[in-house]
Image 1 (tube, rainbow, N blue to C red):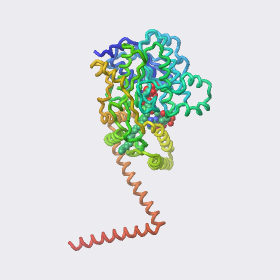
Image 2: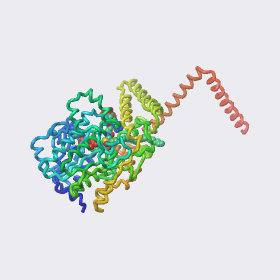
Image 3: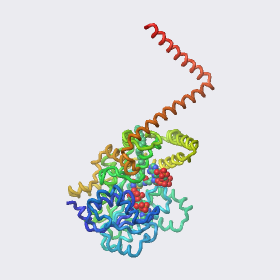
Length: 515
Ligand SMILES: CCCCCCCCCCCCCCCCCCCCCCCCCCCC(=O)SCCNC(=O)CCNC(=O)[C@H](O)C(C)(C)COP(=O)(O)OP(=O)(O)OC[C@H]1O[C@@H](n2cnc3c(N)ncnc32)[C@H](O)[C@@H]1OP(=O)(O)O
Ligand SMILES: NC(=O)C1=CN([C@@H]2O[C@H](COP(=O)(O)OP(=O)(O)OC[C@H]3O[C@@H](n4cnc5c(N)ncnc54)[C@H](OP(=O)(O)O)[C@@H]3O)[C@@H](O)[C@H]2O)C=CC1
């Protein structure tokens, strides 16, 4: 019997961010391995015209939850969606709901965050810092709380090269930042943002670091742990390989490469691609929840959930495998054939952006206009280039994260728990994982049917022929213009033509002699 699965039995668990990528995988695993848990409370905001119930219904009826329904048929009754907006005071939770949460919650998993790199500092502070502070305050009023698990990111200290499982203080106290966000206007915040974030690349990593400081400062008597995953990718094994449903991190670029939009990317092929599958993050999170509640470590422990130090892969290997998989299993209706390369400096990046990204988009938009349709490719390409520029920081550097606490925890698990809650990234085969990731992107994110592969291959052949035709036409036009303007080019052209003519005449003569 798994001690961890057993531990969650009968428990009331509160999850924030349960509608997000990681939150859904966490909920799925909890229901599948501990179907006898009491309830999972999820804080959900109504969104995009959907009610809470519709959002929950959509999640529970997705492919991800198929296995859960077999082991926990009454899963609908065990999930309790609470209307909440983490941007509001007291999260805008009703008094009755708040009372229920305070009375019953045993474990909190705090996953909610804004993960956008370009978020305004005020909004990022509100969600990643102030909301964390408020949740800790709520937690301190819960008499039955056994553990509070905070999900941070391994990149919260990406301004350092070597990162230990400790909290590094930021120069300005989080409380001062929270206060100042209340009275400073947007223009001043915009002005001071670069100074505040310092050598971090964006407001996301900065506010996640502030969030960790808040957790440390406000922990009081709570049993708290912090988990720092690196770049979370599709699932490795559970509930099935390759599950992913949003375009964050590498996923968006995999789509862009497969559809033929992404043709070059400024990346360092040998830099470590510190990806970590979502199911590994979830298994570690559940193991940490158990360990924190049962063993009550004296101080707040931080767990790095990273792959680089135990089983490194690099962006070069990843890129090659992504493209190799698209050779076998292409995406439908690609814009161009999946073919991309790494660039390493500013000049080549600008050149290939102009030639491989902007020019084809302009030509295609011209074609759309000619055929009476609305141009859209240039806009899409500009957005892709903006995304690339934001991700560049992370694909041109390597970091070293120590994993002492994570390895210590692994050694404390029984063999059964090590199997059921496997977070040993050393067992992961990267090539197999990346292939499944790409397949998962096709099946679960883009919802493309595998039966459409022959047609997709046919489409790529047509694109190849158009490419050859286009290049030949371009060459002939360029040559025609050149010989019209240059005597040297004309001489070369006459020399080639007369040489070919002589060569053919010689052949014809020798074949007539033989007869
Ligand atoms: C010698 C060898 C040769 C081989 C060469 C091979 C070449 C390789 C090609 C194959 C490619 C394979 C991939 C390899 C490289 C992968 C690199 C991956 C880098 C990942 C780095 C991540 C670092 C993460 C560090 C921190 C981790 C965390 O803690 S949190 C999670 C990370 N958070 C995010 O990822 C959020 C990032 N996103 C944003 O901040 C915003 O979306 C944005 C600012 C980027 C864009 O904002 P905007 O308002 O403009 O747009 P939005 O409304 O969000 O979306 C609009 C359109 O843009 C598209 N989009 C959005 N995000 C992405 C994305 N990540 N990738 C691609 N496209 C994206 C989106 O589809 C929208 O399109 P439309 O809907 O059509 O409008
Ligand atoms: N994905 C990654 O690569 C990594 C993620 N992390 C961390 O993991 C955690 C989960 O990330 P991930 O699942 O990828 O992120 P997602 O963006 O997929 O999910 C974010 C979640 O937060 C919720 N949320 C956002 N704003 C509010 C709000 N105002 N009120 C209530 N809920 C809100 C979202 O709800 P809604 O559905 O309503 O938008 C969603 O459920 C985050 O803390 C992130 O920092 C760490 C390292 C890497």
